[in-house]
Length: 304
Image (cartoon, rainbow, N blue to C red; front, side, top):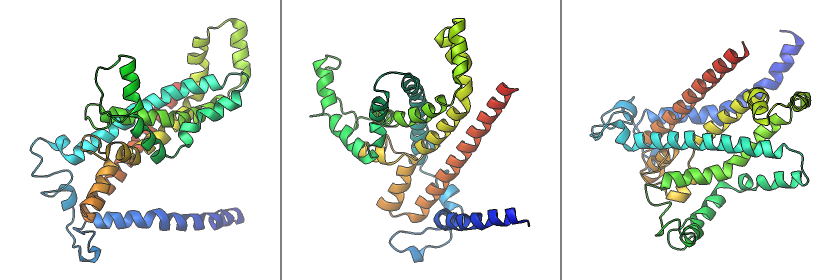
């Protein structure tokens, strides 16, 4: 081992030890609990049950009570809600974030002030923004209902966060409002690294701005854009606080993280909840791997 490698390991080992202590040990403990019937009231009294929490008679992925199929079960609904929320919100945030970033990348007076103002929704803590929107969307005295009534867009007040027909879409809308600035910030950073000479040449040649966007801008920022989408997707799959505050973790909007919290805290089923937590970790990991693999293949095909 040469000196350079020895120095590298000297700095790397403390980080690996810290990661093992902070992330590895809790994950290993969660996996162990998922193989037991541990109850939160007496953690030491749990017994080993193997994979029963996953595939047993009353497991996550097989249950004798699943008379209407897996996707009608609480865990199946939680998975469906999480992916529905993640896909729609990330797609909208990427599109809106790209538009905002393109506008903020232009030269105009007061640009720095506008950039700072755009980041305000993202800077507000999620709990605060959720409570704020919860009051504004209240079915009795909320501002949103009153404005829509005044504008004759609705003929009666709507329970945006309580009605199952609107609740999940309301959460998506609030999340898009809050997180679009984050996507815009990442995309703007990519836009500012692009060479100016390409745009000057296109302007001299009289190329339409829309064609410049599709043929020059988008291909050059595609890599950073995929990175931003991956970061946001992984964060969206862990959604809990926004849904919990806005809809009280109702059955129509419950996410995978909300399901874990309900089983562990409300029901005290530490073993069953740990099985759900471990499944959530695996689902997020597999989703990330598949998305990154698909993105890498697509990028390599376009570059060849």
